[in-house]
Each structure stands twice: as structure tokens, then as C-alpha cells.
Image 1 (cartoon, rainbow, N blue to C red):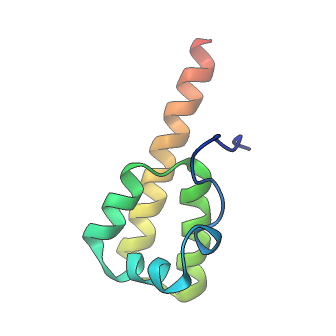
Image 2 (cartoon, helix red, strand yellow):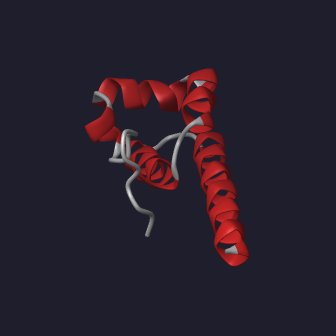
Length: 82
């Protein structure tokens, strides 16, 4: 489990933004990429859950999952070094 970051958004997208804004991320590729650029692992997971709930397109789900895996890998490498 990841620790919530102080001063950053760390809850589910539904809690972070209105549902219509989260749905827009599912439809607008550029907006999704901009959101994922600064997203944390927990944000990626919650957005992934939301995307499956609303039946998002497969490329959208794959992009979110890819970003989550990159963040998780980076965190695991940092933990291994310390």
C-alpha cells in the first residue's frame, strides 16, 4: 500500500473531481495523459477502478495500467536501493 502524500490529491477520482470530469478523462486522450503525468499510484488505481466501472475503452484502461506499473516499478527500485 502506498502512503497518502501530504499536500497532494491521493483519494479516488470520484472524491478528487466531479464524476463528469472523471468521465471526460475516459473520453479525452490528451486530458488523460496530462492527468496521469502527475498521478500517484493510488490515483492510478482509483482511476483504473473507475474506468472499469464505467466501461472505458481498452486503450484507456491499458494506458492507466501502464502508468501504474511504471510508478510501482520506480517505487520498488527506490526501496531496493535504500
